[in-house]
Each structure stands twice: as structure tokens, then as C-alpha cells.
Image (cartoon, rainbow, N blue to C red; front, side):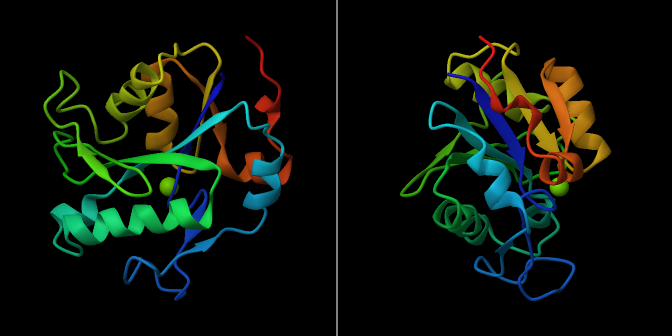
Length: 174
Ligand SMILES: [Mg+2]
């Protein structure tokens, strides 16, 4: 099955409060056009959220609150299977969040490369789903997203284009 990796903040979601940063786990709304863009993908696609969460290291939110934040986007977007987040600036830690659980993947050989532009989270997602970079796409809104995709050798698409022009990679090409 093809793999669609998606950045979250500024790509799929934005603060509902209109503030610059998310104020609490449920302070989220889906960015206009995202629902329609996601509809272009059949249920053959595995869709996964990939997000830097340096706000944890900066002291703006706890790990627990960050996990709740990711579980809420899984509620808002049932198409998403799971979310990987990196809470520290050194990129040493990675948590994988599912609807009802979370898992610590910090002790892997990608520890130190999890924070984007590192490719650690993308690589972990691909390995966990037994997937290679061919047939994997990553959508993001910032230069570190593009850099992470390049390092992981997966195709990249800018969020704005992905939302406006409908997803190019909507056909499986394997
Ligand atoms: Mg972003």
C-alpha cells in the first residue's frame, strides 16, 4: 500500500483560537481544503502524521498534553492512522500516537535524527509499515519538511499546492 506522510501544524491543522500556537490539545481546526484533498486518496493509502513538537522541550506543553493533542487530530481526521512526534530540539525522542495508545520509539538508531529536517520520523514510519521511499510522499509547509523528505529520499509536495491543486500522488504507482 502506498504511504502518505503528512506534516500537521500549518499543513493539516491550525489553532482554532486564532492564536499563533495551540493553546490546549483541542485548540485545533482542520485547514480549509484538507478534507477534499484527502478524499482523493482511496482507502488503499496509509496516511500518517509527522510533527515536530518542540513546544514540549520549550515548556509550553507536557508530553501528556502533546499526546492528547495528537489523539484529537486522529479523532478529527479518521483517515489518519497514527502520528509520530518529536518533543525535543536534539531530535533524540520520538513518540508514536494511535487513537487509544502511545509508544516510545526514542531508543532506535534514528535517535538524534527525529526532529525535522532530520529524516528519523519518516524513516521510522516507512520501516514500521514495511515501505521503501519509492511510492512514499511527504506533504509539508516548511523548508525543514522539504529537507526531511530529501534526506529520506521520498517525494515531497508543498502543502499549499497539495491543497489547492489536489494531490498529485493520488494514484498508486507501485
Ligand atoms: Mg508545519
